[in-house]
Image (cartoon, rainbow, N blue to C red; front, side, top):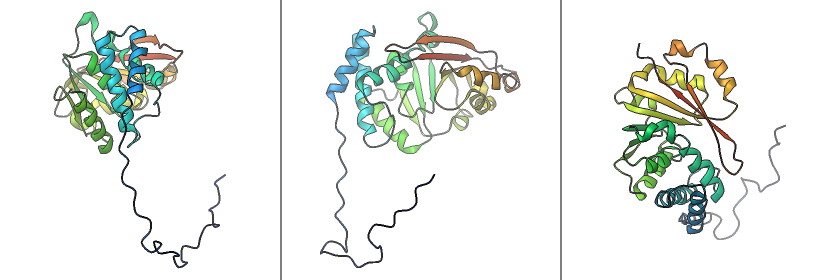
Amino acid sequence: MPRPPDHSGPDPDAHPAGPDAAGGAAPRPPRTPAPSPELRRDVAEILVRAAVAQPLAAELAHFCELLAVENQQINLTRITDAEGMAVRHVLDSLTALPVLAPKGRPPGTLMDLGAGGGVPGIPLALALPETRVVLLESRGRKAAAVERIVEQLGLAPRVAVIPERAESWLEDHSVDVIVTRAVGNVAKQLTLLSPVRKAFDRLVMYKGPAVDEELDDARPAWPELGFREPERHEIDLPHDAGRRVLLCWRPRRR
């Protein structure tokens, strides 16, 4: 039940009291986001224990620190503890590496559709140094925050942040692989990308174990939308963080 409005406060029409009341309190200066070397250290330790090579673990931990810094100014993620960032942001992102780079052959170009805070696109960019990565994020403030992270990691210009919608950008560009995470159900994504399916070779969706209902809903439509039956890969995340389901789609060219 909605809470009734609170009328117990001061009368907004009353005369101000005190010497500063007319002009109001002086605005506080913006708070400077503070880096967290402890977070960076702890994330790196968790990644090394998970068998991530030391140089890559350090880069991924640096990403988590920068994400935490930007998150102090704009809401990019609800996960801010070291274990959560290491497992649910980094290790979860890396579950797609065997699918994206079979037999060690990475894609030439990869697009993260709806990049949000840069996950999974930035961890994948760090793990695939030969791949050019496009982070598509239509919300301007988030795109600007992610661009600052990319610049501080030294990933530009190999990694580009584009503040556009995917269906518009793909009308004039093409990539080898699109990855998506938390950007809508299966049917919504296939419908969105169907008109531009000639612009990419594969679509990899990060999904959870409850994806079967989404697949059942989308199954009658996906042949008409121009997609083949997806390949399915399931991976258990460490620290009892659940199971990741990856759906790998290939568009029909006709």
